[in-house]
Amino acid sequence: MNQQAVPLTLSALALAACVPAVAPVAPGPVMLDGVTYEVTRRPSQAVLVRRLDRPFQNWEGMEARRAADRFCQGRANSSIRDRFVGDGWLIVEGCA
Image 1 (cartoon, rainbow, N blue to C red):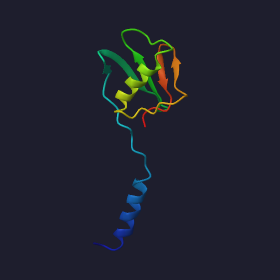
Image 2: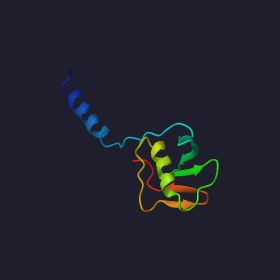
Image 3: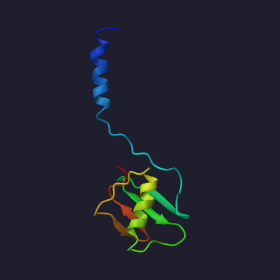
Image 4: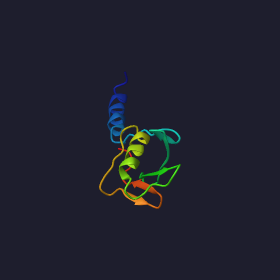
């Protein structure tokens, strides 16, 4: 192996470790206990969860968090900052 290429390769590996991995997400609508949810990721990486058959109420945050968890492949980053927005729930910190 070329000795000049070794430091370059090691530098590239070190830089690659600094880039955060994109959290996996479920494709399409999320189905949970027979209910379908529309889950979208915002540009801020926050996740917005809406129930398709009837709108969420402001007290149904846990159900929205479970749907977000399914969307984020078990890695929803729920926090005290999550909030009810219109007819859905915004998981502010998105997927972990």
